[in-house]
Structures are given as C-alpha cells and as structure tokens.
Length: 283
View 1 (cartoon, rainbow, N blue to C red):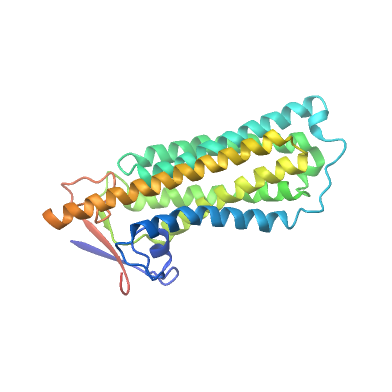
View 2: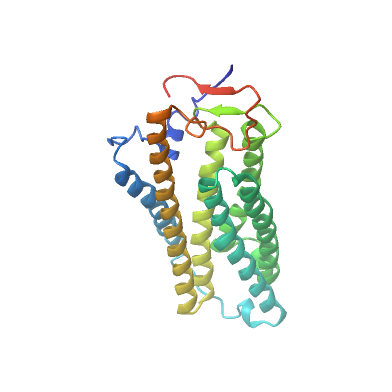
C-alpha cells in the first residue's frame, strides 16, 4: 500500500469540524447521535442568520430609488430575467448540488458537478449579466451593497469550481487507483466551506435585493419558505447520514470495517491497489 503524506498544518482541525464524525472540539461522546444531529442542523441556521445580521447592518440606510429599473420598459425584463436566473441558480440548483454531494455518495460526482458546476454557474452568469443590464451605471460601478455582494459571489464561484476539479482529479477519479481518504485534504476542506459560504451569502443577498427593490410581502414569504424548506431538507439529510453510519457501524462490529467506512472513493476500481492518504499527527 502506498502512503502519501499531506501537510495538515494549514487546517489542523477543520476537517474534524466539517465531517459529521465525532467532533473532538466538543465534549461529546461518539454515541450521542441526537446531539450531533442538532449540531449539524443548527450550523446552517447559525451561519445564515449571522450573515443576515452582518450584511443588513451595512445596508440599513439604503434608500430605494424612485426610478427603479423595474418600472422602465425593457429594463424591467432584464430585472425579471435577473431574478429568475438567480432564483433558480441559488435558490434551487446550488443547495440541490450540495445535498447530492453529502447524501448520494455512489453517484454524487456527476450530480454535484452537473447541478452546480455547470447549470448553476451558467445561470448565475446569465443572471449577473442581466443584473448589470437592468441597473445600468449603478450596477456597472457596483456602488450598491447588493451589487458588491453579487460581484463577490460570482468571482468566488471560479476558485470554487477549480477546487472541486482538483478534489475530483486527486481522489475521485475512476481511472486512478482507489484512494482511502483518512481525512479531507485542505483543498477539499476549502471547497466545502467556500461552497457553504457562497450559498448562505447568496441567500442573504437575495433578501437584500428584494428589500432594496421594495418587494411585496409575498416575495419575502416565498424567500422564507424556500430557506425553511432547504433547512428541513438538509436536516433530514444529516439524519439520514447518521442512520446510515449507525447501520454501518453495527455491520463493522460483526463483520469488520467496510470500504465506505474507510472513506473509499465513490468511483473506486476495486481491483486497483489502494493509496492511503494520511496527515501528520493524530487523526
């Protein structure tokens, strides 16, 4: 078995927080699955609410322009196109891709890459373009908070895709020897956390955009329903993951470790020799 040493000094304990395996930074026993489920559920809500509070603190004095683009002929169509593209890309495809990656290990690569890497990015690019066209000079100069956050999110998507390609090329490539991953490499950790940050900040920016535009109450209601629905979906997914882990651990107790418990690549070729990826220090 070949061993590749990877320096974890940049992220000494991030992988332990990211993965819903026993958390060494908390005083939890590994058997307290209900407590770990609560942590998994609340981390999404916590970061989302924190993002809302921080961002809204910087836009509290913004005034909605009287000659908004939604009232100006052709520009109104650009606004509608911008809203539709971003709603589909950020409100549906991006969280769907994250859900695929976390819960469908046997098929997650094409689903995750297809929904986020291709469809969501293309729609986001179209939505970004429509936004610039709709708001004219104000958008092209990125003077508004909504515009600045949108630019940051769009630019952040580029390294996010590159990090995802790197992760797949290193230890999820079906043509390579199967890899047993003991911990997440730094680029995979950054990819996961950057993806979550993009999603949460994008949801917050959707709220800011509606608020700056003076949207009707039903628009905010739809936004809230969507966020709540995805929170429930992610919560059910985390519960599902823990149930599968519990079943796997019972199987290991009677039959020995399984490939899934060792973190085997989802597209592994079982005939090939394994490459064990370990970090320095204790795991």
